[in-house]
Length: 167
Image (cartoon, rainbow, N blue to C red; front, side, top):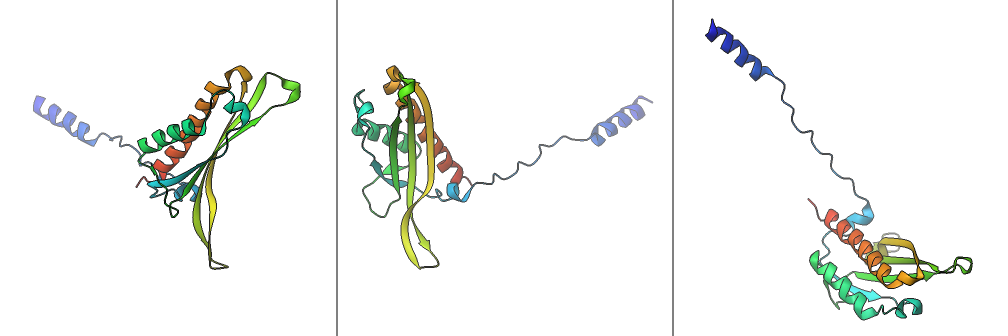
Protein backbone atom coordinates (compact mmCIF):
# COMPACT_ATOMS: atom_id res chain seq x y z
CA UNK A 1 0.00 0.00 0.00
CA UNK A 2 2.85 2.43 0.82
CA UNK A 3 4.37 1.80 -2.61
CA UNK A 4 1.04 2.55 -4.35
CA UNK A 5 0.56 5.70 -2.25
CA UNK A 6 4.14 6.79 -3.02
CA UNK A 7 3.63 6.25 -6.75
CA UNK A 8 0.35 8.16 -6.64
CA UNK A 9 2.01 11.11 -4.89
CA UNK A 10 4.96 11.03 -7.29
CA UNK A 11 2.67 11.03 -10.31
CA UNK A 12 0.87 14.09 -8.89
CA UNK A 13 4.18 15.90 -8.44
CA UNK A 14 5.10 15.25 -12.08
CA UNK A 15 1.68 16.38 -13.24
CA UNK A 16 1.81 19.64 -11.27
CA UNK A 17 1.86 22.74 -13.47
CA UNK A 18 5.23 24.35 -13.89
CA UNK A 19 5.45 28.12 -13.80
CA UNK A 20 7.80 29.10 -16.61
CA UNK A 21 8.86 32.70 -16.99
CA UNK A 22 6.81 34.47 -19.62
CA UNK A 23 8.76 35.41 -22.71
CA UNK A 24 9.87 39.00 -22.53
CA UNK A 25 8.41 41.16 -25.27
CA UNK A 26 10.94 42.64 -27.65
CA UNK A 27 11.50 46.29 -26.88
CA UNK A 28 10.16 48.41 -29.71
CA UNK A 29 12.57 51.28 -30.10
CA UNK A 30 12.00 54.39 -32.15
CA UNK A 31 13.68 54.89 -35.53
CA UNK A 32 15.56 57.80 -33.97
CA UNK A 33 17.14 55.54 -31.36
CA UNK A 34 17.72 52.77 -33.93
CA UNK A 35 19.72 55.34 -35.93
CA UNK A 36 22.37 55.07 -33.16
CA UNK A 37 23.07 51.42 -33.97
CA UNK A 38 26.70 50.73 -34.76
CA UNK A 39 28.08 54.12 -33.76
CA UNK A 40 31.55 53.73 -32.27
CA UNK A 41 33.02 57.16 -33.03
CA UNK A 42 31.69 60.73 -33.17
CA UNK A 43 32.96 64.22 -33.91
CA UNK A 44 32.30 66.45 -30.94
CA UNK A 45 31.22 70.06 -31.13
CA UNK A 46 30.44 72.12 -28.08
CA UNK A 47 28.50 75.35 -28.38
CA UNK A 48 30.01 78.43 -26.71
CA UNK A 49 29.42 78.44 -22.96
CA UNK A 50 26.93 81.15 -21.89
CA UNK A 51 28.77 83.88 -19.98
CA UNK A 52 26.76 83.19 -16.81
CA UNK A 53 28.05 79.61 -16.79
CA UNK A 54 31.57 80.63 -17.76
CA UNK A 55 31.42 82.97 -14.78
CA UNK A 56 31.11 79.99 -12.42
CA UNK A 57 34.03 78.15 -14.03
CA UNK A 58 32.40 76.00 -16.70
CA UNK A 59 34.69 75.75 -19.72
CA UNK A 60 34.56 74.03 -23.09
CA UNK A 61 37.70 72.07 -22.16
CA UNK A 62 36.04 70.76 -19.00
CA UNK A 63 32.85 69.86 -20.87
CA UNK A 64 34.91 68.07 -23.55
CA UNK A 65 36.72 66.01 -20.89
CA UNK A 66 33.46 65.02 -19.17
CA UNK A 67 31.80 64.07 -22.45
CA UNK A 68 34.89 62.16 -23.60
CA UNK A 69 35.05 60.19 -20.33
CA UNK A 70 31.40 59.14 -20.49
CA UNK A 71 31.51 58.27 -24.19
CA UNK A 72 34.67 56.17 -23.76
CA UNK A 73 32.96 54.26 -20.94
CA UNK A 74 30.23 53.39 -23.47
CA UNK A 75 32.69 52.34 -26.17
CA UNK A 76 32.51 55.54 -28.25
CA UNK A 77 35.58 57.56 -29.15
CA UNK A 78 35.82 61.17 -30.21
CA UNK A 79 37.45 61.60 -33.62
CA UNK A 80 38.17 64.43 -36.05
CA UNK A 81 36.91 62.44 -39.07
CA UNK A 82 34.39 64.47 -41.12
CA UNK A 83 32.62 61.23 -42.10
CA UNK A 84 31.78 60.41 -38.47
CA UNK A 85 28.42 61.42 -36.98
CA UNK A 86 28.60 64.80 -35.20
CA UNK A 87 27.62 65.04 -31.54
CA UNK A 88 26.61 68.57 -30.52
CA UNK A 89 26.55 69.61 -26.88
CA UNK A 90 24.60 72.80 -26.27
CA UNK A 91 24.06 74.62 -22.98
CA UNK A 92 21.23 77.03 -22.51
CA UNK A 93 20.69 79.47 -19.69
CA UNK A 94 17.48 81.44 -19.15
CA UNK A 95 16.25 83.68 -16.37
CA UNK A 96 12.97 85.39 -15.64
CA UNK A 97 13.37 88.89 -14.19
CA UNK A 98 10.45 88.37 -11.83
CA UNK A 99 12.11 85.24 -10.37
CA UNK A 100 15.45 86.65 -9.35
CA UNK A 101 17.68 84.06 -7.80
CA UNK A 102 16.45 81.22 -10.04
CA UNK A 103 17.67 80.03 -13.43
CA UNK A 104 16.55 77.53 -16.06
CA UNK A 105 19.49 75.45 -17.25
CA UNK A 106 19.16 73.12 -20.21
CA UNK A 107 21.59 70.62 -21.64
CA UNK A 108 21.00 69.47 -25.23
CA UNK A 109 22.76 66.65 -26.99
CA UNK A 110 22.06 66.24 -30.70
CA UNK A 111 23.51 63.62 -32.98
CA UNK A 112 23.80 64.74 -36.59
CA UNK A 113 24.16 62.08 -39.26
CA UNK A 114 24.23 61.99 -43.01
CA UNK A 115 20.94 60.77 -44.46
CA UNK A 116 19.76 60.32 -48.02
CA UNK A 117 16.61 62.08 -49.18
CA UNK A 118 15.04 59.67 -51.67
CA UNK A 119 12.91 62.33 -53.43
CA UNK A 120 15.92 64.47 -54.32
CA UNK A 121 18.62 61.80 -54.25
CA UNK A 122 20.68 64.09 -51.99
CA UNK A 123 22.63 63.27 -48.86
CA UNK A 124 22.49 65.87 -46.10
CA UNK A 125 23.51 66.06 -42.45
CA UNK A 126 20.58 66.37 -40.04
CA UNK A 127 19.96 65.78 -36.33
CA UNK A 128 18.61 62.25 -36.07
CA UNK A 129 18.17 62.17 -32.30
CA UNK A 130 18.09 64.87 -29.62
CA UNK A 131 18.21 64.62 -25.84
CA UNK A 132 17.27 67.48 -23.53
CA UNK A 133 17.55 67.84 -19.77
CA UNK A 134 16.03 71.00 -18.25
CA UNK A 135 16.22 72.02 -14.62
CA UNK A 136 15.27 75.10 -12.63
CA UNK A 137 17.92 75.85 -10.02
CA UNK A 138 19.07 78.52 -7.63
CA UNK A 139 21.70 80.85 -9.08
CA UNK A 140 24.04 80.02 -6.23
CA UNK A 141 24.19 76.39 -7.44
CA UNK A 142 24.82 76.98 -11.16
CA UNK A 143 28.16 75.19 -11.43
CA UNK A 144 27.33 72.04 -9.52
CA UNK A 145 23.85 71.79 -11.05
CA UNK A 146 25.18 72.05 -14.59
CA UNK A 147 27.42 68.99 -14.22
CA UNK A 148 24.49 66.95 -12.93
CA UNK A 149 22.32 68.06 -15.84
CA UNK A 150 25.02 67.28 -18.42
CA UNK A 151 25.63 63.90 -16.78
CA UNK A 152 21.90 62.99 -16.97
CA UNK A 153 21.74 64.02 -20.63
CA UNK A 154 24.81 61.92 -21.44
CA UNK A 155 23.30 58.95 -19.60
CA UNK A 156 20.18 59.27 -21.78
CA UNK A 157 22.36 59.30 -24.89
CA UNK A 158 24.60 56.39 -23.89
CA UNK A 159 21.64 54.33 -22.64
CA UNK A 160 19.89 54.84 -25.98
CA UNK A 161 23.10 53.92 -27.79
CA UNK A 162 23.32 50.70 -25.76
CA UNK A 163 19.65 49.93 -26.44
CA UNK A 164 20.15 50.44 -30.18
CA UNK A 165 23.09 48.02 -30.15
CA UNK A 166 21.26 45.28 -28.25
CA UNK A 167 20.53 42.19 -30.30
